[in-house]
Every structure is written in structure tokens, then in C-alpha cells.
Length: 384
Image (cartoon, rainbow, N blue to C red; front, top):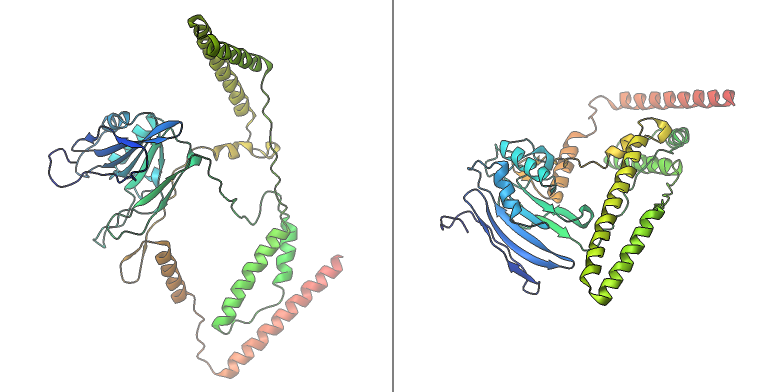
């Protein structure tokens, strides 16, 4: 689909024949080549666009604006943008990435990426980075998700963008503590759990000690942290707005019965009036919300909690290099790379002295530990 008709660049879309769709006008430029398909999705249609931006061209904000205008008000544009910016998780920011971000922000669009590299150069001296991601508009953030796919073996790893008609229900992230954690109780529980020293002489002892440490910290944190009970807040609707809604519904019912042009005119006027009133009420509520924010403990640090709702850049997940010089792509390869590194780093120091010295050191350590715990117990008893 390249403008010059030669077999290079371009884009394509594979779509199941049972899905209602039709192809719209493609975007054929030497700097952007996009295939567009309109899919029927319930309430309104969605334009699916697959694009490729060659790296050798200089693409400005206006070029991206012209392309996005052809996609309508509800679309998903994914592909190889060859644009880097830290906002979607790239290592660095380049001029094309700045222009694309300005275009997306001016058009009130959202950008979603995995945060993991998608381009894996064959040259081992070059570092992988993110150049494949998705830009969408007219779709709620709660209905779309993005993940990496490692099924292909080319220099570009694909991304999976999933859209649901309903809100995606995600499991709450498990946390060890919250703002109501009883830290003195946590300290007492951990002191009690780690009061007895553990000898680390073999690999099995180290594994058992790490597991005991982890479970002890988790148990102490959960026993000293109450569960947060989320309260549902009811939103009060003013009486004048409820009255306008009733009037609009009555006019709509009347227009559906008589189809009179005069009734339709009154209905349109009532709809515009209701929209204006709702916008004013929303602005007043938002202004009151902003004025109530405060960074102190008196309002439970409401200002800092409000900033969490602001759109934040995607956190970059840097690539890992394996011992053979290649890059670890999938999660399984990354886990193996970490495990091999930690295995080589955390090893018991070999003791090359005589066995009598090692035995004497262990006995002195036990005596010092026993003396410390005895002194600690005596101090607690005296305080009581």
C-alpha cells in the first residue's frame, strides 16, 4: 500500500469474516501509510487503523492531525510510529515523538503502550526501545488494555490491544500496609518472629531462611493492618435539574406521539437548556472540589490523592541482556536472566581456615546472640 506502488512499507489488517465491517479510505502518504477498517460495535462504529511511519521522513504535528481527522470521532490507530517519547515508555525523546504527543494532546486522544520494548535491533550494540503502540479516542480507559505478545520472532514484537463493551473488572492489588497500619504492633511481631538466630550453612538453609523471612513479614503486616471499608457516596441532584429532566421527558413522549414540528422545536430547546444547566452545575461542583483540596493531614492529604488521577507517563521497563549478549524478551526469559544473575551474585563466602576456628566462631556468635536476647528480655521486664 505504498504510494509509489513498490513492495516495501505499507500496512494491512486481518479481520474475521463474521465481524461486520467495511473498508474506508486508506491514508497513502510517503510518511504515513495506514489501512482503515470500520467495525460495527454496538452503539457506534469504531475505525480500526493499522499504520506504518517510515523512519527517514520528517513528520510534523500537522501531518499527524491530518491523518487522525480521517479516522472520525471514535478510533484505534496502532502500528509502527517510529516515534520515541518517554510519555509512552521510550528510553528517550526524539523530535517526531514530540510532534506526535502534541498532536495527541491537542486532539484529546489517549496513548496506551506496554512499557516494554517492541523493537529489537539485530545489532547488539543498539538498545531495544518502544516504537509500536496505540492511540485511541472515544473509548473509555476502563474498556481498553494493552499487553505484549512474544509469539513472533521478528525484530518487532507485536502488542495485543483488547477492547470490551463493558467495564473491565480488575482484582484489587494485594498490599501489605495502608494508612491505618499499626506500626508498633508490626515492630513487635517482627521482633518476636526474628528473636531466634538461624544458622546459614547450606543452600537449603538460605532458601528456608528467605521463605521464613518473607512469610513472617507478610503475617506481621496483615495482622497489624485493618481492612479498608470503601463507602459509597451518593450524589445529590438539585431539584431544579430534576424538574428540567421531567419536562424534557414529557416533551419527548409528546413528540413521539404526535410528531409535530412545533413539539420537536420545543424539545430541542429543552435539551439545550438542560445541557447548559448540567454543565454549569458540573463546573460549580468541580470548582468546589478544587477549593477543598489540601496537602495536610486535616483532609487526609486530598491534594496528593487528586494528583493520582492525572494522566501519567507509562513506566519504562528496560530490556535485560542475557549472558550470551542477546536480549531477554518474554517474561520467562527475564525471570531466568534474573535468577541466573542472583545465583552468581549471592553465594556463601567459602571458609578456607581450619575447622577449629570455624567452630570457635560459631560458638562465640551463639553466646553473643544469647547475651543480647537476655539483656533485651531483662529491659522489657524492667519497663513493665
